[in-house]
Image 1: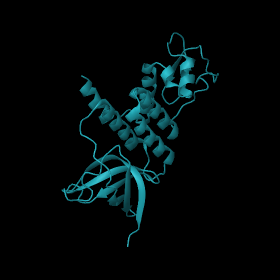
Image 2 (image 1 turned 90 degrees about the vertical axis):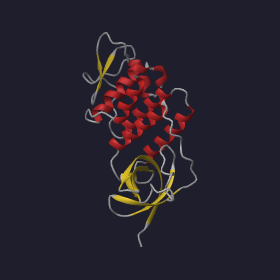
Image 3 (image 1 turned 90 degrees about the horizontal axis):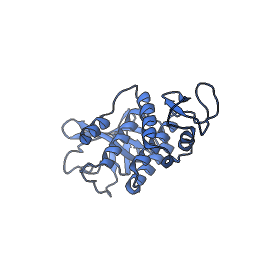
Length: 231
């Protein structure tokens, strides 16, 4: 008899598998990102039907030793979220796609799981979605080892000066330059996560450059969708 594993998870993405089943990419608390097959999940009478929903914490059981595990049960005490897509929804889809692209498979990332769970809670209550999103991106980069030095400039290894101006260079950090409106005080505020004190355009420029570098320049489908709805 195969052993069942029990875990909490969030659904990142799902796709069809055959006529009646689904493959779900999930982010689990104890085992990181993994793929599960939910057999018969597209059938209305399936025990999984309607319960594989994103942005809700799911309590699941699964079995198997191969890379593709088998979903055996799921917490049924969840109501499906609505299908209306808002700016918040697209931001959540973007974050899920980031996790799919950047997380290694089957590697425990409990701190990151807690970060993601906290992000979902903040999104539902915060009025400033953009600041919340930038904070998550920066923390994600740090936790995955893609963070950068907030203490010294990249050319002279000198301490960041609050009154000097800088530019961000992907994969390296901050370069001291003349005639920039991005100052050392902004870098210090980013380091301390006082993001409300930093002009939003610079926050977005930094995270966009850093994430694009991590993705080797590949575009994200969620970004393309959001650009279309903004037109």
